[in-house]
Image 1 (cartoon, rainbow, N blue to C red):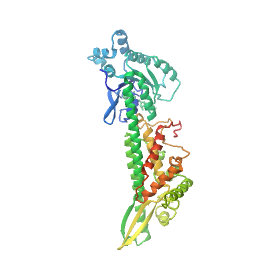
Image 2: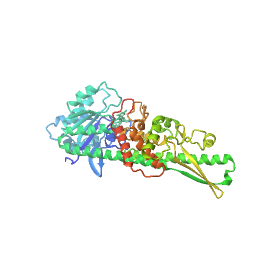
Image 3: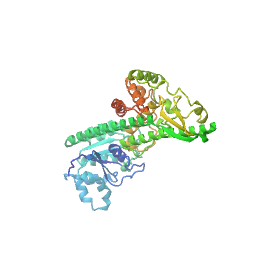
Image 4: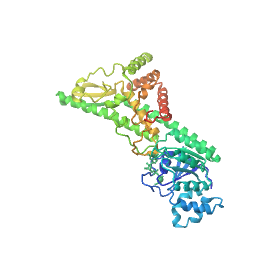
Length: 478
Ligand SMILES: Nc1nc2c(ncn2[C@@H]2O[C@H](COP(=O)(O)OP(=O)(O)OP(=O)(O)O)[C@@H](O)[C@H]2O)c(=O)[nH]1
Ligand SMILES: [Mg+2]
């Protein structure tokens, strides 16, 4: 019985990457994938559900075990109208054919076919057998060249062999495919069966709207993170008796500083988890040499991200002049009222971003106590660094194929993991956009609502749209 929504059975050799293709297309990184052949032993349906509605279904199947036997049966029964169904009907009770029946079952029930082949290997006789038997099913069918080892030598041969037997042949790399490439594949599926055209258009529309919504959610998450991080403070009241010696004061300050920094780190991690959830990632593997793997408050991160000194100064002056608000961008952090603390107790490195202090201490005295408060962040670079890192993280979440799971590979990354960029994301913004953000940062520091917050959200959203759709070169640069 033909299903109301497009259903596609993913078929091919054991270990061709079928489950990886399913995982990537359905954005499900919990599909079982393994380097050993024979991982998938039963067919499993993976629906794509958007707004509670299933828009397309992919069926992961085990690999072919004896395609020769199936092909032989097909060839001797060619007069049958529906070979897949006839085969399953005849062999269902025969345990010797249990595997083949499990494999052909979804096709027997009307699913279209996506054949996955490893285009980096030479075509063998067995492949030709599979290609021919799938042709004989007469189902709408597409072939996917999943280039497992980046070996292009045999690609033309594959194209030739496949194009004779399939309605469409496409290259699709389960480990590298981006959102844009997934959409392209869905578009190509339209051509393999006209009856699906409208349904697939609906599905693609749903995908695109969902992506737009997720991009929006990510922008909101980033804006919220910036607001929380910039208004964050830590206070502690300490009895005067504990502060008699300078060492006691230094220790208290160092503890509060550490708590403050940890708080900022935790805010970032919480936001990252949200972003990861927006893009449905559960398995995560950030390379240790990635900017994302390093401490938010480290020199490396501070140097790699954020605005240059010059841009920062311009933004600070312009934002102050334009809004009538005195923004402490240019001068903040230079007033090292707590120089002794940073020099002696904390080692002069912690709490610095771009060579400037992260936040200032405020000390109030009353009734035999000192009340220490640190925050909000006064460092002018910090918000831009945090923004850039959030965008970097989002770019990775958006572009990391689910089928790749946590695989470690030597092949160049298509996701910005080890970004080698001439400019950071925030440096690429227009001066006007930088000023809008600077104003938002300044308001956040003072706990004020920003009137033009939606403008900032749109700025961030635009950057995210760019990193999601842009072609990424082979060095992994956006
Ligand atoms: N480098 C690379 N490896 C891939 C790609 N696609 C799949 N693999 C790897 O190939 C191996 C097999 O992938 P699976 O998706 O489990 O293959 P399968 O066809 O479902 O295998 P069975 O279920 O055993 O038939 C895994 O180690 C994958 O990580 C790819 O595009 N690039
Ligand atoms: Mg599998």
